[in-house]
Image 1 (cartoon, rainbow, N blue to C red):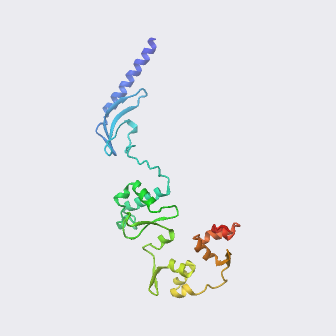
Image 2 (tube, one colour; image 1 turned 180 degrees about the horizontal axis):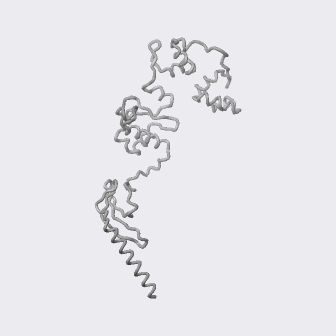
Image 3 (cartoon, rainbow, N blue to C red; image 1 turned 90 degrees about the horizontal axis):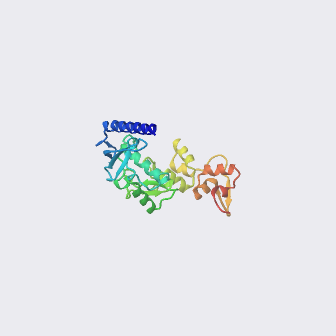
Length: 260
């Protein structure tokens, strides 16, 4: 019995010694991020030392361990549960680019993220109200404007490529389009036309002259005959992807996702 009391007395003395050591390095008044330490609360039976803290952002009080004082308040962390979604990754990417002054295309050019969209929930609501889906990409109407609801929209990858500020605009008979759009209108392969222009050819000739060499193979689906490039353009599937699928043994209709 005396031995047990001796052990208990020894533990209490050790506990008090540790408490005194903690009080000597007082954290009261110190600020960690948005967390301010108000005072020492005490130590529990496991020798965990607790401090009373206050969040300077939301005003929430809490008790935290000495080694558990974080720079952010748990009550201020967003609870949208979208951190692993594609939409959240897009928002983070835009936010980082705009805040990066060394990025020559965004932060370095003065492109900013509006205050409303600094909160992800607001960007999330706007996206769902403007027809967002996983096949669309975020695009600015004015490529020199900021990221804000009035200047942004969800578009297809092709539409976004046509709105790049480094696009080459070509005028034919008073109509202006990008080279990609002219290739789509004339049903020509972009790389073929681009190669002809790179060699110094005329845009009209590059778009209208028939390709040299073997004629294009024609494929038929539902009694309609077209080249592989034309089928790919019609169903908006990359031509290279279609060719790879067909090499694996798939038919053209299966490669395009067409029900026969």
